[in-house]
Length: 408
Ligand code: AMP
Ligand code: ZN
Ligand code: ZN
Image (cartoon, rainbow, N blue to C red; front, side):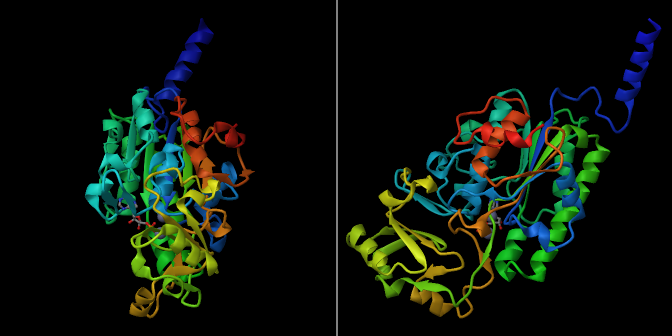
């Protein structure tokens, strides 16, 4: 009896401890998915990153997170959210045309971004909510649209001007055990590493500064999570959508050297240029490009390699041209109008290219400590997150077996 009372006192004291979750703590661990857009797999080696390093020491880092093709922002964030390849979730590029809807998707068009008809498959936040848990998205591609007539418990319209620490403070509050609507799953998104990469190139001091800013943010996030007793009960997934490769005026492919650009309608631009044929036979245009296939690859829709998991979707147009790494395809007119174009860096190249690979770090109670994982495809992350939250995944293109080696 004495022993029992003693144990009870210890238990009550432990629960009452300020840095520990209160009795509101749900069963199971939380997941926080953080994306730094355009954070290449090797960026941590460019500068000192004490906060990332701590996560790596106590958790898992992979040699790379392999993006889906095309290695662009919207398709990859949505592949991560759904565990599906583009031909199964509809996000075949940042810009696309849907013949049935007779509509164009552009990520700058708010109405399109918020229209659920563009988004197929089931994003992880819906799986979370359907199974009695709660989700909050501080920006994620797809979270602004009522996919399957649902929204996460908390979500925000994308606002690039929102401050970094305000984003973190809000998400920590959503996750906090004191919040009556506390979420089990949350996302954070930051665009600035991508922007600086595009503008200044991957070897610039501006990219180094952006990496250091990301590291500072991780430090701030961890501190806030510690204050709220969240850190020991949350699995952190730090990811990116793709890497980045330098481009230059010395490496260009001019369409006019091969075809009349007026014969095609460009829907998505280089490095993964997608076009419909306006005048004439697609096969004839394809043959003209194929004959001079240097520093790029060209495919008719039906011949797009299986490994791109792209061609079986009606949104894929007649032609796909993929620039070799570092090259830029465009029209003579476009190059003539922009003397210094292209400069800096780009992404959208073949997802096999190492420079297109993104970062992955997993850290938290479920992850092995100090484990180095081989590169893996980002379509497995949905299954990983479902497993971490102990929820049943919707059908996906990923498997938990591909990533379970990183778990304890
Ligand atoms: P990319 O052209 O592929 O480099 O796209 C990167 C850009 O996507 C970032 O600079 C963001 O401004 C933008 N972005 C990311 N998420 C969203 C969103 N949910 N809605 C609109 N734009 C977004
Ligand atoms: Zn991106
Ligand atoms: Zn970008």
